Each structure stands twice: as structure tokens, then as C-alpha cells.
Image (cartoon, rainbow, N blue to C red):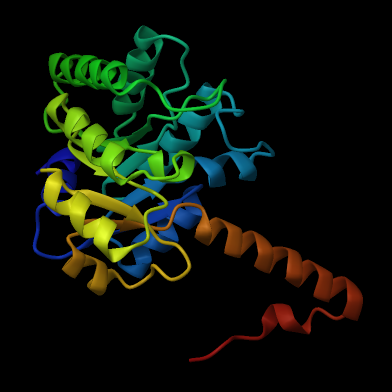
Length: 259
């Protein structure tokens, strides 16, 4: 079974797919060693680790090179977060998706936020883009490649539920494999989306939204934690550096925690 087939199957198993988010080779290997069955890259983590802010500020070639290195150093499926596609035109975005598929990933996240202006891409326009991407992937031989259509309504709309469901159905009809709705937190909204959009629902871990077993009961099929692990590691590193300087003592570097 190929990585693409494995990744597709994981979304339709009985268990929730708990996706670990990596930003470099060590984080990806740690997640694999920890037992995760698949990895998603975090655009935030990759960008910040290279000295950039999120929002397609990092050069796409550099971003893709890091994704490639992650794929080559783990044995589990990897999905790539490519934000809104790093392109001004549909043609450029489709080409970037194909380039991403060529490095060996099993899927992508593609969001409907606009990067150089406020708001979301028109739903019908984004649906057409997804259809073009699916056709291009199929023509290149990437059948069942997982397109996780990220819907940013909960980040940009005051009353997002109805529009989220509408967009979700348009995107799935246009070739998306599943939908990703970061920012949704209420049980009623999650259940409504899971029920009314006929595709696996991915949600983002947030404070108060952390229990994967409970989320599976609500209809969620995939849970990811985005940049949270990267942020925790970065904060721990900064705190450790401060402690080392303030104490002028390196003993803490050699102490183990727990058993």
C-alpha cells in the first residue's frame, strides 16, 4: 500500500486520526517514534524555524525543500501545509500542488483565506480551483491524493456555521477529500458540520478542545495541533537558555525528568 493509500485509509478507519505536526526532521522523527501514524507539516513552525513569520512569507522553494526532507526521513505518511498555495493565479497554485505531490507527500492542506488582502476567496472560485487541482493530480497519477480543504470562516466571520457548511459541501463536490475547520470549538457546531458535510472533518486542537476521544464522538475524524508543539518547544528552549545564563550552571542539561 502506498503512502497516499495509507493516508486515505486512516481517515476512514474507526479510530480518530490524531495527526502530529512537524516542522523539521527531528520533530518528525520524534512524532513517528512516539507512535503517530501520520504527520502533517506546520507552515507556522517551518516559517518561524527559518526566521520568517507565517503567511507565505518564506520562499516556497525553501518551504518545499524542508517538506521533502521530512518525507525522506520518516516511514509514515506526511501531509503538507501549503497555506493558500503560494501563488497569485490558479495555474501557479496548481503547479505548486503538483510540485508538492512530487516530493512524496500523501496529501495537502489548502486554505481559502486570501493572503494579500482581507477575507476569503469566493466559495465558487475556490471550488473551481479545487476541481483543477484534483484533475491535475489525477492526470499526473496521484489518485486518492488527500486534499484537506481548510475553511477559515471561524477565523473571519461572526456567525460562521451556515457558511462553513455551504463551503464544505462546495469544496467536497469539487474534489476535496476532507475539510479542516480551525477555530470551531462548540459541540453543536462540530456535530452540525460533521453531519451535514459528507467528508471527514478535521479540527484544530485549542485550549478547551483537546480530548480526541470526545471529539470522535462528536463526529470528528481527524485532530491536529498545528503550531502548538512548535510553540511549546520554542518556549521551553528560551526558558532553558535563560535559566542557564542566570544560574551559570549547566547541571540542568544532564538531569532527566521522570522515568
